Image (cartoon, rainbow, N blue to C red; front, side, top):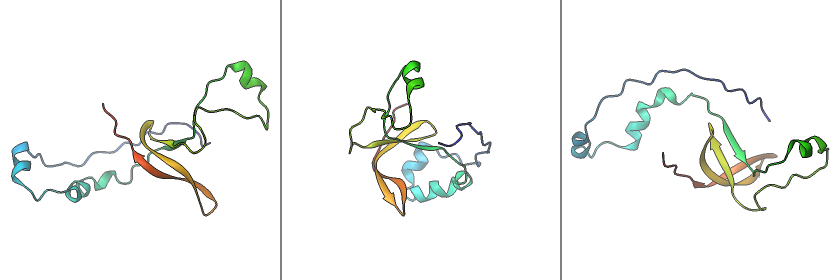
Length: 115
């Protein structure tokens, strides 16, 4: 696995025009494309993506006794969706796929988080 050091990228959000709720209601011209154009400066910000097959807990003694060839049982069954995390936030679930000899994740469900 890659080095888990957190790197912080500093950037300034672009100045966005203020739009009142009334102005939004009056304008049926505003679209998702307009919002994407205003966010252009953040498109190059790098995020960390993790695809988690499953989890388990072991005590230190068990961990120290592990050797090559040992099997670690996870909390998921074969064929169940895996979790996709972006910057430590669950954003989707998917299935493991093989593309050109590399593992990948085909997203099957986007997860809506309540803050």
